[in-house]
Structure formats: C-alpha cells, structure tokens
Image (cartoon, rainbow over all chains, first blue to last red; front, side):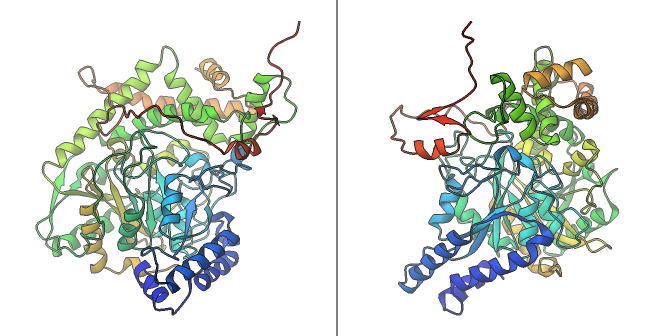
Length: 481
Length: 94
C-alpha cells in the first residue's frame, strides 16, 4: 500500500500505527528466517514510537505524511542506542552514542523504526553475500541474490517487511538491489542528502537515498531527508523543492538519451529488450528518444576500483580495536592488537579492498593509479555533461542481468564488480539516478531501468518515473512468499 | 607484485593466514591487472577530479560545544580505565 493510502487509513482511524506496527513485526518474524533481511529488530522502540504517533493523531497534531509509518534503515545508518553493525563482525557489538542526521529526520517526521537491515559488509558487495550476518535471499526466488550492498533493504521492501527504507549507494548499492527486487530506488545528487551518521565507505562517492515500493513514496521520503547539513562538509546548501510537485506533470516533448555504449557486449537480451520497450513507452507518452554516446563508459569500473578502495582504505583505518568494536583477545603488544583485531574483524572482501586501496595510494604507485583514475573520472563526468546538452535525462539499464544465483560470483571479484557497470559511472559523476521496475525475465525475476539526471534534477527523474509507472503495471506485481 | 601486496597488507595492519593471504594476493593481482587498462587513455592534459561537485572548503566558527556522551562512548570501549581507553603497554620499561 502507498504511504498516502496508509496515511488516510491512519488519519481516518481505520487502523492505528500500533496495529500497523504489530502487523509488520508479526510478518517480519514469520518471513525473516527465510529472507534474512533484518539484522536486528527494535520492537520496544517501534511500539513506543507507534503509540506516540497515535496519541499525536488523536490530538490532531500529526507531523506529516510519514507520521506512524513503519520504516526500517540499512544497518549503515547510525542510530542512537540501537546496535549498528554495518554488516561487519568488527562492529558486531557497536551501540552508537548518537543519532545520524537522517535518523533524526525520520524521528522528527514521526516514522516508526522497525529495525536495521542486512547489507554487504561496509557496503562492499553487489549480492549481499559478503555480510557477516549471512546472505539475504531474493523474495522473488530464494535461490537468487537480492543484489547489494543494500540487499536487505531491497528484499524487505519487496516482501513488504517495511513500508519504505533508506539505502546507501557508492557504486550502485541502492539501484542494483532495487532493480533485482523489483522496487524503486533513488541515488540522489552527491551532496543532496547528508552523509553525517552513515558509516563512511568511499567519501567522494557515498550517497544515501530512499528505497520504496513506488515513485511517489520515494519523493515523499526525499522530502524528509534532502537538504543542507552543516555537519557534512560536502552537503549542498541549496533550496530543497517539494519532490511530489513534479509528479503527474506530462512528459511530452522531454528528450531522453539512450547511451549506445550500454547496449553492447555483456548485457542480457531480456534486460536490453525491456529497456528498449520502456523507451517505446516513453515515446507513446510523448517523450523524444535519441541515441547518445558516453565514450568513456567502459573505463568507469576500473576507475571506480581504484578510487573507492583508496578512500575505503583510509576510512577503515579507524577500526583498530582501541575505542570501539571488536578487539582481539590477549594481544602481546599494540601492533598485534591492531593486526589481530582487524584481521579477525574484517571479512575477506573488505580486506581485499583495503589492500587494493593501500596499494594504489602507496609510494611509487600514487600517480600511476590513483591520480590516473581521478583524471579518467573527469572524462567520465564530461561525457555526461556533454550528453545533457542534448537531452533532459538518460534512460539506461540498471544492471546488465537480472539477479544471479547465490554463490555464482563470490569467488570471482571481477564478475561481481561488472554487475555495477551501469550504476558506477553515475556515482563517479555525482549525478542522481532513479531505478524503477520495467519488466520481468522468463524466470520471473524483476528487471529495472535507470533514469539518470542532471545535477540536482531529481524532480525531472520523479516526473519521468511517475509517468512511466502510471502507464505500466510492473510495480504492482508482488512476490509470493 | 606478490611481495608488494604482502607489504601493503602489513601497512594496512592486516595479517592474513598463509592460505587466506594466497587468495588475497591472487584476487588483488587480478584487480590490479584489470585496472591497468586505464593506461590506454591519454590523460596528460586532463585535470584530476577529487569531487564530482564543485565545492570549496566549508569553514565554521571555532566554538566550543558541550559534549556529554562520554559514558556512552566508554561503554563501547573494549577495555577502559576510568575515562581512558586501555591498550597493551606501548613503552618498554627497559
């Protein structure tokens, strides 16, 4: 059910937030053993928040459309007094002493926090198999991965184990799992949503955004989380529009670009066909489709696998077993305390990325790898800026294939990395990208398409996404569990 | 390459077991080989991008803000003595 429909039920007293929350908690307990979406539930807090919301409504003091709505957060969002693991053994016992800005924003909006969602360790992964708390399964077929790193978030929304959630996206971690689970996900413009209180992975790329059942819910969540935060030095101090205002506006005459480089080798036929069919649908709605070129697209993945590990290796230096998190038992000296705590606490993928990052930043290699990658990043960004001189937005696949099977790519990092081939360029350029369902494979797995916009042009993406959603029924299909 | 990777593992304060280390070296090598393809591009006249959005340093007034969460921070500490984090002895008495 849409947030606005739930809000109507709550305000007309057809259901209370307490009842709604209890229904969700019951459903989570029933289905979570199958899916493993939740790392922790905060039942008591949720029921107290729901009760408080019901009291506000009785007094006619509702604080907005999210008041009393049960949500959940990826376990990368810092929540005061609620265990926040980031999917890692090294933070298995970490209880944050403060709330991140996004956690505060949801509290102010009156939302009910059901719990914290599973993810690849430190958001490094594309299948949610690199979580210290076990893999998440795809609600459409339990033998398949849900995507990653926000795999718990995507699966929870698809299986209706929360109304909506927030993920984070460094190279596709909102959009790729959203597409694999048949839901809507937005990676906003870099700087649009605060990073204060999300555990850092690669700071120049990390961006938080909503993951929801439909475009309207996504816009409603953006109204809650977007905006300037003095606690994040890269937060953009520009006015925030009402993101629901562009919903329902016609798309006639808008120009959409199809990047020719995205439809070559490596793309699954069913995915390519679904995105081309979506382009036809946009034409029927009056939009103009034209081919564009992003000539440096093929260099995005190698560029990312220099920049992201480099930043990660610096960000993850703080986990040393001294002030918080896992500490190895009986170290003989300080060096052994650092080495053993980190080696025991980090999983193999995180260790691999720390090593790559340290390597590309080390003496003698910095210019050849890190500086080189930053220069190629300039070329990748320029490709997009050139394209946006000709079109209003770009239409692309979100992932090259539908979800793959558990275990299929865990031993081959390069194969795993290539599942983010269409999402990574968007992070490197700092652009907003909206994914929404546009079809199903013959095996019954969801396919997503991606709308990429100009910097700070999320409204246009919502306008286009909403128009497409109204004209199709993909978003109404639900997995049977 | 193998020795370089082992050296950076030490710099990053990681000490994998021999078998885990072999796997890490093998995977790291395949990724480093993969990113080598950037060398095909001439970037001699290109500026580096460290941030996708043009931003300048964000300065603020240097004012004291009261912090009262010391207890909560210490509750997360693996070992602490009063208001101090405890670690193995760093200075050798001899």
